Length: 299
Image (cartoon, rainbow, N blue to C red; front, top):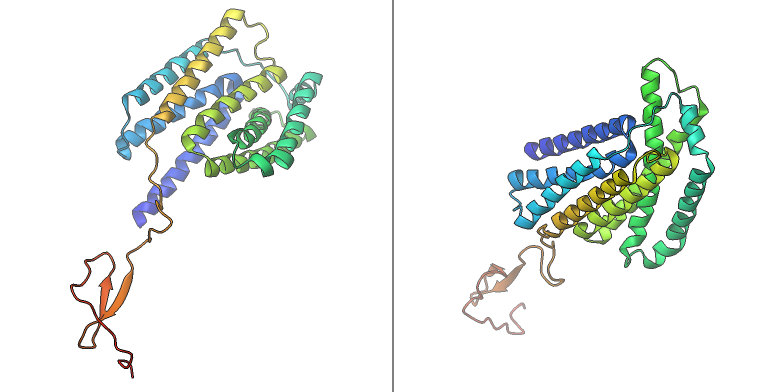
């Protein structure tokens, strides 16, 4: 029991460390680079599961890992440069530009329609409902988290950004979006197969995030057509590798295979001819005699 708790605590610790590292990455690199590289975590998970959990990594799974690595390399080589920002007010000016306000309003409107109308009616049958909600909201989460990260970085360097109300607005938006995103992502994972949810979510979340970052931070201004096309090809390669890797996962065994299958062996009682009570495990062999009870036996 202590070993299980130790492993669980260690797992939670590594998740926290990973999220902190991801947060720091958004400070120093454009979202269009950091988000697609999230597929590398799938490779690490597959390799660790192969060695630690003894989950067999099939040949197609190895091909998926290779495609993810090749695609990630292409993305890194052709990624846009990070824009230098000196204050939260400057980020706020980018956030209130008409193009990004139109994108934000569109995301909020579509999300409300999905939550209020589509989710109660089609959420249990259409996988795109829940994933669409958490993907679109996730793009706003990344923009807010990036703004908060830059504010913290500038504050630590000596330029206090906490005095600006824009910092706190970004913080409230980030918290709201994170809660909504995690809620509907968990609903998608509870309703549909993980092997289907993960690649679709990766594709939609990454696409919306790259699109939002391109509008707000203008990541691709000044980029050549060749670089943009190369990064797009890299993203498609990573997406293909992710889909292949998840398609080769061995499905988890069902907890209950039959509604009438008992969770544990049943124990019943029978009476021998001498009147003595005996326990019988229902999984064991049937006794080789038949007991006939007379109506006056219990008198």
